[in-house]
Image (cartoon, rainbow, N blue to C red; front, side, top):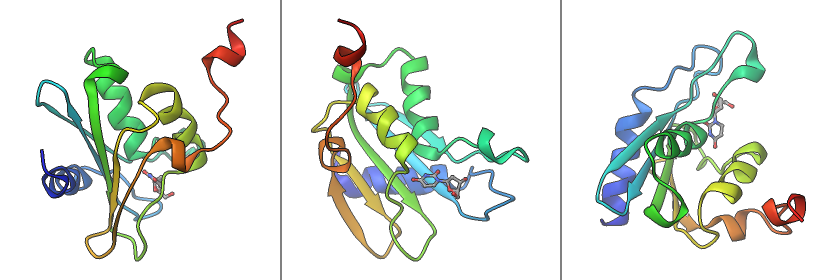
Length: 133
Ligand code: THU
């Protein structure tokens, strides 16, 4: 799938954002190895800490549907902000565990765009091997 197609899918997911507190809308779309699209959106909560970011929603949905690192091909994250939404620290840690380090991550706000990966977003990673010895 083309980068732009996956970005367009993420913009569809952004419509499902539940963001009554920040009014900042984020969408995510994962392309799977078998050609499916898994969507995620930010889902906020009156207890702010219970909020889930769009990319975490998407990657948890992918895992919940049986996909794993080797069957997750690409992730697009989009927002309606003035700047592209780079994943927050919690999402970087989650993505570092659940997707390949070099898997393409596309960021867009419809104006600016960039392609990155978790190895670039999160250097000096704390991973499973550090815990399970
Ligand atoms: N948010 C995301 O969904 N992904 C990001 O990469 C950055 C932040 C959400 C969380 C919250 O609902 C809103 O954006 C403002 O922080």
